[in-house]
Length: 427
Ligand code: ADP
Ligand code: ASP
Ligand code: MG
Picture (cartoon, rainbow, N blue to C red):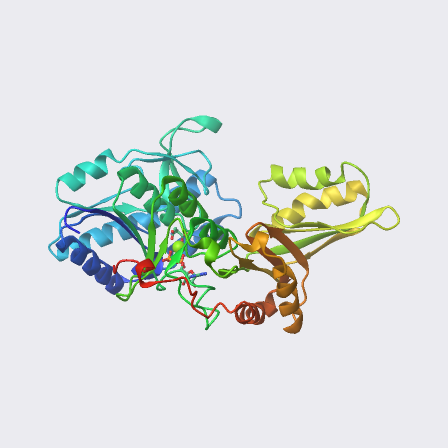
């Protein structure tokens, strides 16, 4: 790796306590010893981000978004400094930088900011000085004074945002490699913590990875995959605990020859909302969804049932954490339109089958529904795209549904087109 520029990212579980930080520093030192120049992006230690969020929630149920970002960013500041110190202790020159110091600027959406630009002048200068550069992930500083705020304010990139910091830096620096070290060996056909038969993939295309991420596989942040795709950054996902080949996320030329279903994703962060006996007339959908949009609540699947006697039931899903807010927003709407009422169910989950070839292969939907029926799983809602079919089911049936689908689509069997040549280089 002599002279190569490598961006590495270590997730929270890989940095959960001092021993693990020393272990990560050891890995970084070994890579450095091969002559590689390294930029290392770190997440907050263990559950720090969750703990900071609950601290804020214990103070107020409506924290100021600017203050919340200032608070959350400290998690990554901590781990960056500690990794840097651990490297010093091992005789490796290193320096930690905040997202702002690393030149990451974003838009003004606190809590879910999008990276607007990366100007890694300081990062390059530190590399020139012979330093391993440790960058606090998940954060940047807002670029302009749009939306009335001050430029230079600290922003955060949304949960899992350190993945995006890493890919954005790799793109801006023209890095030779971008490695995401995590607590599993790579990308699997389903969440390996839930599905024992899940099989590791050696390669997955950007499109399929994006869909997996969007449908709940939290192993990569959605925006990180998008940025990788747009900028042609090959992303290696691999274990920070063992030396094992990982998974390459990149353009997949073999996509047409593969199993049509490439993987399963699931999402528990869902709640179902049903408006009962809504009057069936023009403008009703707008009066329901416009206030939700104004409140910044993301509505996902929408099903409007067949109307009877001039009224119809309207169901949709929202992120589970947004349910209380959605109820608050909808209460006056329901009263005003004269609907019979509002019912909600926070104990649902989404399960998806994903594969780039699904759209021109008939029969997959029927097979999915048949498999769920045979497993005794009731389907509450369905939605499809070119590369996925998603069902909303009861959360209690999630494991049974995933196991049944994994078996029915033979995902535990290696794909015949995968060859040794497709395996990533060892980390
Ligand atoms: P990190 O702290 O390293 O960012 P995350 O918890 O964000 O790690 O992501 C890793 C987790 O993603 C794994 O522990 C695994 O449970 C989960 N996961 C979900 N779907 C998949 C999948 N298809 N392949 C691999 N991991 C997955
Ligand atoms: N610490 C942040 C989170 O927990 C960002 C990250 O881990 O990528 O979401
Ligand atoms: Mg993560």
